[in-house]
Image 1 (cartoon, helix red, strand yellow):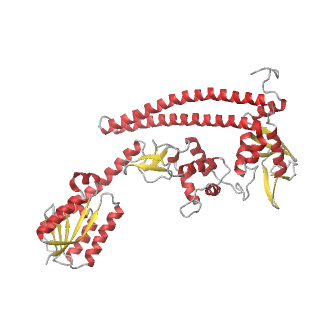
Image 2: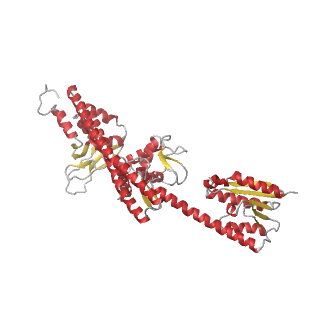
Image 3: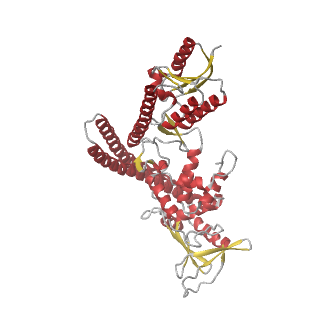
Length: 504
């Protein structure tokens, strides 16, 4: 009767698989050995190179449980010691299994080593030596893996795990990150930063707003507040990343600007005093509405379903005591929007042409500047790549490499910041032009279409630097050029120095 046998094979790295240590190669060799010895293989345990440390541990424990629960199994076959164990703890467990029954054996085929309860001292010594070498190999492999990941981080590629909104191409240590356009997560992450950056949202209201816009968990619920916080504090989304206590400038495409990310960090880290956030959301909050007498912030209150505003009266000398309903103030704001309206089609056409011409000149300037900055960026990145190659080739020492690397990275960060600034300035420039043109046609209609409270508030903050409340009367202070728009519209004269018959 053939002796019942277990086969155990394991490949730890892709390189081992490519060099002939693949699972099929190991299994074939062990099966041929079992056939020569007239062993009967009743079960195979195979650990692929893709298995994680936890999976390897799980399979090893399953092996111990199986052979412990089947006393009729006497033989365990393995290619080499380091295929089954790389630490003394596992070695002790295998020793215990052997000691329980003197007929049990472990055959390490390639090393021509057979262990059993009554093995000679030199065989046990070889077992200990092989275990020590396997442990050293495992420790060295871990150390070299960490070095490789650190070098990858130094190149600008994040070597870590999943980032929401992105997908990675390649294996661990060789990952290249791209925005995942197959899923909408990246759009919602950008929106989360935009919302919080306005100063009109808390983490809770950001989560609710994104949920209303369609961002849900697999269970159909809003994202948890702590998950929103994790996203908003992750520098990966502005093109940087943290790895083993250091911050690196990444090569992956950012979702937001560096400036926006750090503005959000300031808001998240600020000390919140009692009463900073109110239970109710007010259209004219966030310091937009101030008292005309004492310049203190005007407070909003909800009474019987209506919003009222009044001076906070921190200055006891202030005599403002009126409580004014929001509807009355909003009506005055709509009158201001009406003041932007240009009735003359000819003047409206002039505005359109003038804005297009200004945009054309501004875009050319923006493109030229960004083109030069992109050239600087390419040169610096090339220098970083060459520097890395020289370090790997041993042409420069570590101190020189780190000194030059920091110098280049600091310069690159400044260039990237300048590119982001110009891009953002151009976007704001376009936004201003569009708002001037649209508000000059239909200011009231645009405001009325802003159904959401936060959208109306954003528009008001764009047009007004503040609104001063004197009794029940608002006095607006305009910004972003709207003071000129209102003045010209009221006078009907957009072309000072020209009569009404003069062409552009």
